[in-house]
Image (cartoon, rainbow, N blue to C red; front, side, top):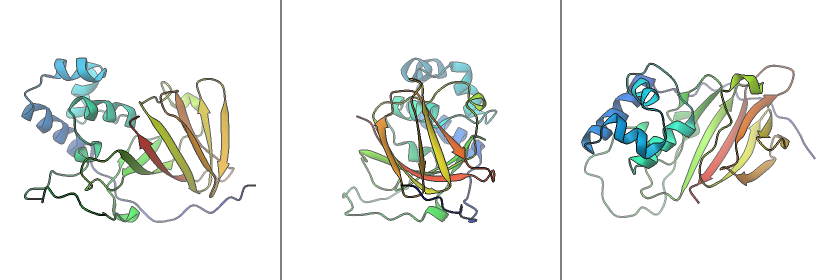
Length: 204
């Protein structure tokens, strides 16, 4: 059971990596951490963190998420300024328009964190456009703690695991897996267009 859908033509906003780097630096400095200390906490190489802060490189979700965890912040704080004067009261619901959510491009993926205004989130929802089509476009598989649920919104996607297993899913089909196992999303199809997915990740 599979049906492919045409990819949407909407242009989604991408945040300048310099803004992400600047926010990472501000938060690190506010916590009085050196790059070396953040590297030790996060497992991300010191040289990579330095390049991230100076906007000299685009990095994967995995590395941004690792830095955010080490700083004890939600990754969404790296994509939007910290809001001042916000009530500490837990909201009942927040709503985010996919077309207006700021995103970050790695070249292989564009990803847009959703619902970043919800405090103390236990899940991280994310809209992503998948451009990569070959494993060779990646230095390594992506790994991060927790579990992951994905639903294809348009196009077709192959999820390749470091175990050698792979799964091909089309529009309105889903996958649920252990995200600590190395994985890569690849766009399939002969027309060369990006595939679109909605992903929800948990930390445990």
